Length: 292
Ligand SMILES: NC(=O)c1ccc[n+]([C@@H]2O[C@H](COP(=O)([O-])OP(=O)(O)OC[C@H]3O[C@@H](n4cnc5c(N)ncnc54)[C@H](O)[C@@H]3O)[C@@H](O)[C@H]2O)c1
Image (cartoon, rainbow, N blue to C red; front, top):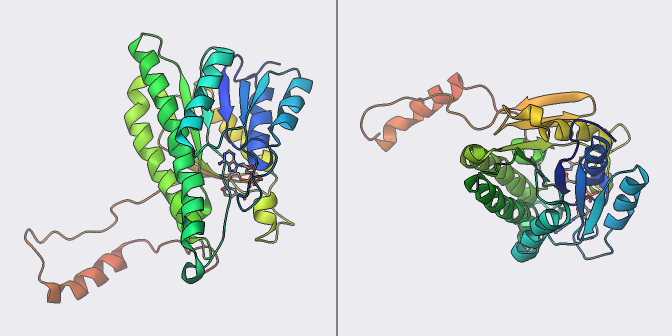
């Protein structure tokens, strides 16, 4: 195989099915060697068999190289061992695609503490843990004079960027991932790492339960932008959030200062009504929350 990622070494988390599997297959098609991580959970996060072996077999059948990893990405130690497995197996790490996760959708008033903890853990900590270990490796390589051309692609969601009714924990976690992407990009640029995020859209078991998916994009529709961001050609793109929806690729823009008044001293509480109204009038209208 030859492509944009020839000889590069990649990890894709949650790559046993759905969007992660599609990313892994496209990275392999482009020439990357892969660690296929999947802990194996049901759609709402109960432990089940890992489908990672099947994806490794598919990649091998294409003539590519891949190995299985069964780590829970939100377990800090297991996430470290996942990064180490890429280094031990293939001699390094160039690309980390954080994708694993599950949903426990619930309206705010009904959400339980356990559901909140599980969803925040798998997405937010599951991104932090792998990224933290990979960052330590890339910084060490850079210090030793062996700086790698490293790429991270995180997985956010329209729910995390615009908000989504019935997905309070998921939206909070995915919004956190978008912000984590900005911080990681700003911190890791000096050691050769770009960090971007994708909000994908696809018909998978995650969306099949929750929406009408008859017209929805396919998992593999999301993977070319991930493979391109993972390539050496994408070195000038970092700290960016994209959304892909079938053939439509969108650059997202996050929180920014859109209107302000500076009095030069502390405001009196009673004078703030018209000031707040003026700021809102000047600012662009916020995009609607999904489902609102
Ligand atoms: N499907 C969509 O339209 C959509 C939209 C926005 C964001 N996303 C995000 O894309 C990613 C992939 O979603 P999908 O639709 O392919 O879901 P999916 O359920 O088909 O696949 C997710 C995979 O992650 C694995 N996984 C779950 N917890 C894990 C853990 N702790 N460690 C390792 N692996 C774990 C699961 O076993 C599963 O194979 C998720 O982060 C999801 O939130 C999906």
